[in-house]
Length: 166
Image 1 (cartoon, rainbow, N blue to C red):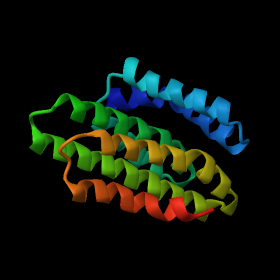
Image 2: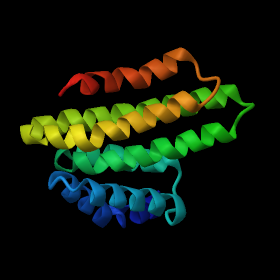
Image 3: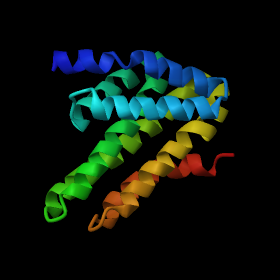
Image 4: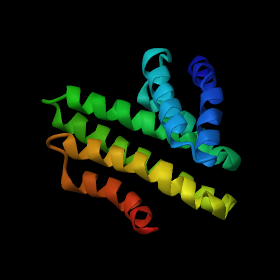
């Protein structure tokens, strides 16, 4: 476990860059950095989606690092969704994996709530960067076949309040 945390910790520089690009409203650079984070996790960090989720949870609990948890929850959700698409026949496993995706969406939701508590000026950052991530995760959730409606609804319920805020 410690070894995996160390590997994920190496991403902190990229997470800081992502946060900076989002806050100075440079969408192109933020998107590029987010892609680097996703690729770094997928190709170089030998960690499971569960490991990434746990690391994101730890960052979320450290209130000043809650924004850095968002791309990690997004990466974990991507890896969970890929895993679900690979396991076509095992619907019970797929349900558990999709519940984990919904848990990632919940983590992003909690991070956005904390970001608003920390600084009201984060609202535009949330609208321009975090909500699109949540929509992307939900789109992936919709594409996975044979997922029960209550699992999909669980993911949607954490996004709905933020979709409506303008």
